[in-house]
Length: 219
Image 1 (cartoon, helix red, strand yellow):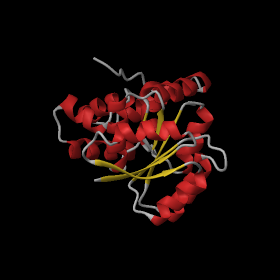
Image 2 (cartoon, one colour):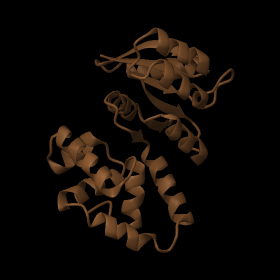
Image 3 (cartoon, one colour):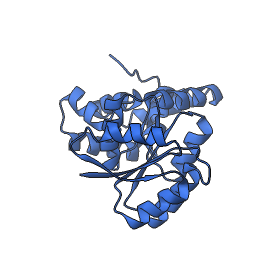
Image 4 (cartoon, one colour):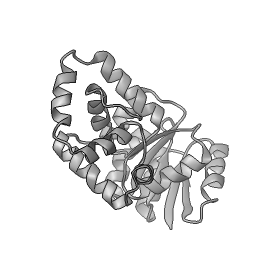
């Protein structure tokens, strides 16, 4: 059972998220919080697998709470759930230790899937956020990035390139496994090797590199 915390200052929003998540047989909402400090306390006092934190909350926001949760409950995987997709919030959350960033208009089935993915420790970003980060990078990137990126991509095997192509399209490990007829564990191993070979810290960096190299995301 995936023990989950919902932190949002809006009571109705918490109730709605709880209703969605409790439709899943493997997810249990064990705590709610209306601000960041309460979220940190809940993670310290209970065994929380996944914390869903709103970014903007009066009395202590989700971004500030990330460090506290990481310190008090390192086993907890943190995903930000917000109506705001500001690039600075995304970057700050990821730097602070969040493994996911989702928008509040995420479909119910996608929210459930995201909690399951987060529980495994796998990073997850809403596809539109991944695209925004990539586009922001491309706008500010240098003209010589393409050749350098292609050189690094050449380190990969054909199978690893296929996996990277789907990572850059925003697919999760489970979706990549289904698309490429692999076991989920095999996909995870491929991604670990890809990040090592490309000297990337996370999936977003690898996706940006793939776009720099002109690696297609479909077909």
